[in-house]
Length: 420
Image 1 (cartoon, rainbow, N blue to C red):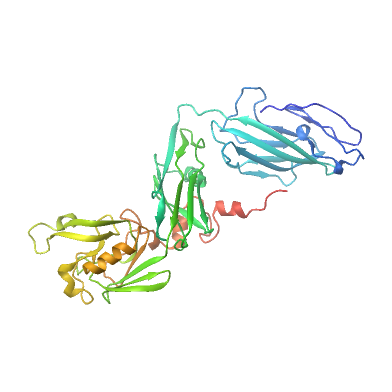
Image 2 (image 1 turned 180 degrees about the horizontal axis):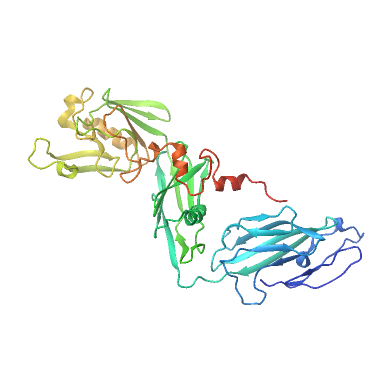
């Protein structure tokens, strides 16, 4: 980092020397330092960066700002790169040293603004810029967010797919810390590491209605390991619509649909019969298909057996990747509202299926109760995220330590008082 200044001395003011240049101090015309504009604090601080023009800082090393001598102290440091990313840091209680606590990005341009005060309380300022070098021969970790931009139901999780596996918890913390989710209105949430290459994000409860969710990555250029650096990610913006929840009851053989807490329809249904029970728990609509050809062989039923089937199905609303739908089942209409006779799907009349198909969107909730089936898988077969209780979900974050009900590292940073 290059610093240049001129040296001057004024009676009644402090003159100090900086490792990277000479200092400047100034007093007001009345001789009172407190009435003077901020003086050039170059002489009160030093940086651990390059001193020659054209040299670049090593992004592997933390940024340090140190007060020189005993007649002044640092009061605040703000470091940002050209994209607006802030570098987190800690200032010692005596104001003698500030150091970064988050990694610098490679191949980035930084601006550092330092505020100081001398022994009389007069304020000083110094702005320094520097560039970091490029990582050489390193692999890049790119991130792809999901779903696609659009409007979804309040149950839609955010996904982050990584281009390379990340197994070490400390490295996961670096990655997760850089994945930012902002919502309007503000709602707290947390990432969960599904596996080494995938994360899901959700709040404790469903998203608010008519909310905006914006997702971005600050990982580009950040060192994750000796051989891995953060790569690019396209930001994502989605919105939520109404809160639509369809409660599907295997005991009453009816589905009750609620919109923003108000019941809007009750539909006679049939669900999975013994041996093919419908999964219990919360599921999220993942797609809608006007026509699907359903075959028993796709769920392990051999052709030619008493349970085999090959049917054209209309108004099919998908809730699992393995083939569970809410759909029209005119062949079993006599059992709707009275018996469970399907192979796991939720069947209803063609008219009711068409109404349901037209009134739900991806991200809406289908909650199954009183079925004898097992609970919906949390991951891998659609979105069963809401079947993971909040305390366990928080433990799936690399940033949660101690009480899973307490704030994450990111949330604690937001609540931490800023230096003066």
